[in-house]
Length: 372
Length: 260
Figure 1: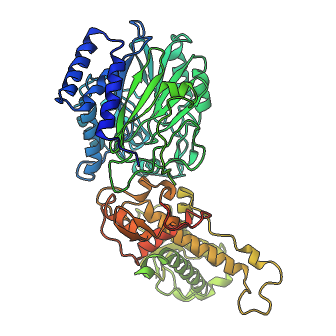
Figure 2: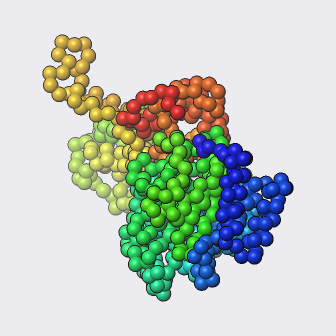
Figure 3: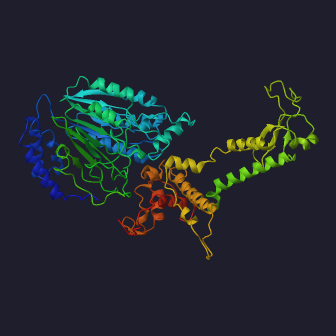
């Protein structure tokens, strides 16, 4: 279990951060800081109203490469409302969370698996709920969205699954990393049988995920205009490395994709699918997982990356434990602080410092109850 | 209740196969119990069939009773009722011996698409195999003792039956319908390959329930809560099968009751 800090401890920590933040202020954030400070000292505001001011106080911050922040929601696995309201409430809560961020994030990224079985009504329900997100929404496809109609409905709603965009000097790439080789035709599976096979994490009849040759070619061309020291953040639903094949915590052509990213000074890859705190670094590539709003997965029984500090075992008696959403603070150098906003625990930040120091500095809290 | 579920697939499969083989034998002897001829032909002449080669019989080019809509069928067909009382098989009248047995078996396979369900379950969800007991067959086994004279057949039976039990558990574990979920939730959605079920830690004091529980209590809790199904009979076939699968998946892990 996470150790919950006392109100006093939180207050003191936040005050310390506030004073730290005041060392480097523009006028706008100053107003916020001062208002928060006034509220806190007068006992008018909750201590957590401090937190927003720690955003964007980067020493090397500049107009050309400003620091910024985006939020994320992922893996909601929606059934229709009348089948499973718990998953629906999970997504609603996450939308509330990101809408209540102050200041608002530059955009909200959705990490895939919006639907559980790729059905029209599931995807439409998800789309309806996500329309309430105040900040601009960027979305990625997951295997649960895809394998009923091979992405037709999802693309109707959200467009191309593979695309890129630039934001404040960072080049963002969104991939469809859940491309599976045809395992269904020979077996004579119906679309729903195919969907349910892919939906089973431990179902060995399916093929491993890939990015695939056409997308790799597209990626190379898309990145051609970015210089080696450019800032690149890649989104993929599955981790773009090989962790545990039996659960498709895996991308079969990961090495080929990594090779394309190798020339950059540093790259951040952010992935869904694993529903847990997951951290890895392979050379210049920093990998971060996303939390699910529906349920947490157990950790893979073997092959865990050294940098991952596992979240402690979720409490089955609390449907929200181990679930959540979060934020990503992008630094001027393109590296990120990854915030896991766990709904039933203190938030955990896996910082750029932790990644750069290969786990020596700024170590996130370690759990006392590892998963089995 | 237990008997109605677990050995059901396997025994029915075996029974069906035996039925059809027996049927083939009977047909071979010219006693087509329960069969109905669809083409004209004296049934009195069937007694000679076994001695005739399969192609040696007179084969009329047109069937006298065949309507104009019927295509290509140039052979006399007979429809055999299989001894399950449900299915029928249509074969060429002069088919005998092994080809007839094959035809009947093929039809039975078509009628039972889930006949390989254990193998399929194993392939889909890769559960652990039971212990290998083949060492019991080595050496001067069982000499002078009441027990221990095992044969390969014994070993095969143990393995197959244990595996079938576990396969049944895996099938239920991975099926929201089998679990009776009203929320589309199955066990594997939080516990792929039964991960994080830690059966070796029971019995233990379950803090959230305020009492000592067994694995089955936690299974029942999960079925009633996240799965939103009905209370599961602790001695019922589904609970037994689920326990079997979950235990099988922790093969080799040290028992450590009370561990949190």
